[in-house]
Image (cartoon, rainbow, N blue to C red):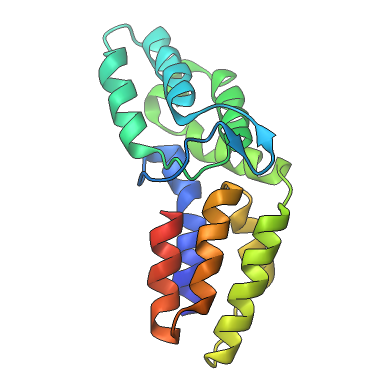
Length: 174
């Protein structure tokens, strides 16, 4: 169960770099701070791609990005990733290698919110009562990319029966 919950918490790190699921509240005011919405993030990134390769269709890029980046992501995380990507050279942008490093840098610069702490505490208690053990440090680090609203929804999963906790968290954080 621990690995599944950690996978759900960590999935978004990959989503921002390459495209992932979509649901939530838009990214504009996440974790108590402001930042880019998913649409703004995608527009900025696709302009960069088009600048590097004018044959790339900006509208198609934005459509793919908007359907691929989870709106459960904090706006300040998206802003930091976008700033990093904007500083990358065209070779790494077009090769698709710039995103992961930028996601890692953005993650390292963010703090855990009270909602992240609360969610990890609740999940840790629930997993322990189910006979498992949740690595709270990994959970906390993974929550730094998610909006407080998404984390509050995922926290409610701690009230579910043992077998339902993991799929519940995956649903709310993907």
